[in-house]
Amino acid sequence: MKKLLLLVFLTVPVILYSQKFENLALTPPMGWNSWNTFGVEIDEQLIMEMADILVESGMKEAGYEYIVIDDGWEALKRDSLGNLVPDPQKFPSGMKAVGDYIHSKGLKFGIHNCAGTLTCNGFPGGRGHEYQDARTYASWGVDFLKYDWCYNGTANSQETYKTMSDALSAAGRPVVFSLCEWGETKPWEWAENIGHLWRTTHDIKDCYNCQNINNLGWKYLLDIQVGLEKYAGPGHWNDPDMLEVGNKGLSLAESRAHFSLWCMLAAPLMAGNDLRKMTPEILNILTNKEVIAIDQDPLGKQGYRLIKHISKEIWVKELSNGDWAICFLNTGDEPLKLSMNWDHFGILKGEYKVRNIWEKENLGTTKQLFNSEIAPHDVALLRFSKL
Image 1 (cartoon, rainbow, N blue to C red):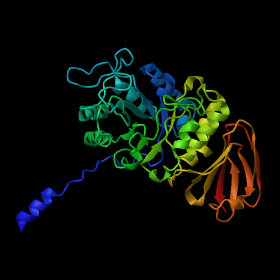
Image 2 (image 1 turned 60 degrees about the vertical axis):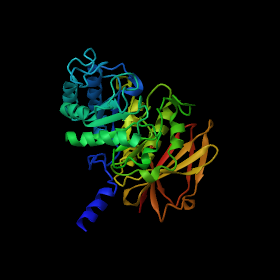
Image 3 (image 1 turned 30 degrees about the vertical axis):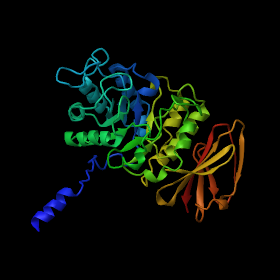
Image 4 (image 1 turned 180 degrees about the horizontal axis):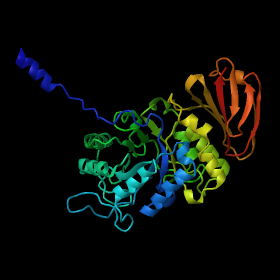
């Protein structure tokens, strides 16, 4: 009988679960990433300057805590021992020194690499070096790893990302693991135990609704999120890509709407603008604490699209303490006039206080009609608090 039991045990498939670090990213991560504005044209002076401004501008106080160095920091080859090394011209002080500077500002240090043999811009990737690289990142004090998906050959995405997740765990330093797999193999269906966030789309660009594969506007990416809300929650987030707020291809209204909808999605908020050139209007968008509170709500519910009309979309998000957020998006090219009777919204049970967040205006209760005019590609964002 003992031999039979042993044989049965040996023939039962063993399911291996990744051991990502728990109790991280319980709300969507917030920070700044170098890619959207600077691409590979980065260096340590720029990164340190962005860390300074994140603190001095009030963005850190508003919740932005990660400084993420994207692709282009690496030397073109690993060293003689196979270790990743930074480009000596761009980062002469080394990555630990840069990480130490970021930490000295009360911020957290993020870095980028790739699950393939090369990064998307031809620098050394992590395939076959996962455990070695994880130890390197730990020695540098890395707190956040964005892991891309270029030059992956025939690799299985789930197995590949699990290997890196296990490597990070083995290295012992808690790291938020961001899977930048572009949504190609539906990571929302398998990545919850592997990483803390996963890309659901290809790369965003600073345009409203452009739809070239290498040039996707935020409205196009917003539409892709429909139906994914059930996969998100504390410690595991859908990521529709970084913010383009304040970049030249968006109007002020489009930046405001983009930020509002990303907060409705409980999306990670990674600013990607040049903080040195940020206007007061853009800073006010990025640091609006009432809007950020919708994104960072501890209930961790991703919002969803309730209604889609020809020139209007209505997105709703359940919040803590019985509150709700409702966002009206004008998708048309003309002003949109609204007159809303809240009795028509079945999600609102009972009477609520109503606040127009961007206008900083209390609107009474849901017993009153809501009248508004929304500019093209702009939003009205309202919070409903239970009486």
